Length: 69
Image (cartoon, rainbow, N blue to C red; front, side, top):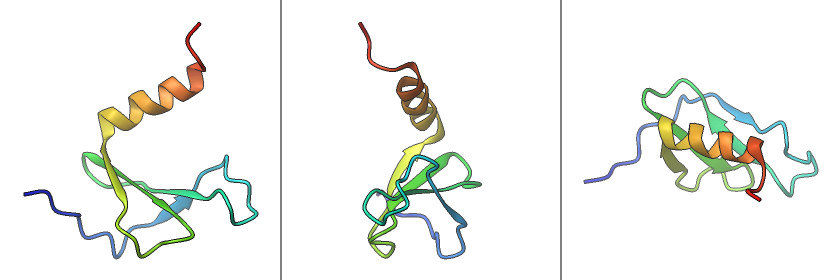
């Protein structure tokens, strides 16, 4: 059974790439063992997406690398 971890005390931080205008605000909660919770700051009470730390690292590395040619 997949369960959403208790994130009531999580410290959410906004992505440095968010535009600050309230339209593109991605937040992540650091310090969660083995997972990286991700949410849209406009809907903070919605269930966050949960990624494994390995999956999240590969995603971030891919974004930094840019499109494959």
